[in-house]
Length: 119
Image (cartoon, rainbow, N blue to C red):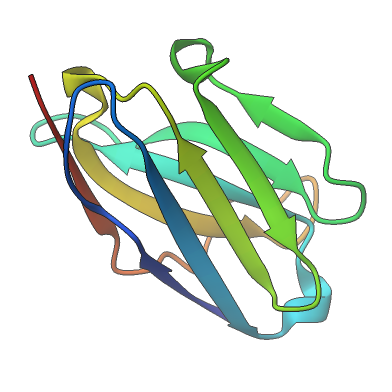
């Protein structure tokens, strides 16, 4: 089993930046891909970005392309989400999760970290 802990959220003005961190522990060797999700009140939890552990290939949802960057540190077992040019619509609770194979669902959800962007 893999445990994930998110940090780095906060309150920022529109146009500002935040960097989220996700610390992984447990069965690290079984990680295939890690993703950042976000969820606003009354809405579903949506994938924002993901990164493949083996070669750092990335995926971004269209709304964050060019503004967010996902990266990983294999040594420290960390995944980051650098968020620039933040918009009020980016306000949400952000979660990281892991896939152990290409076909498995995301799991190992952390407690989330709140990002609030004021206009």
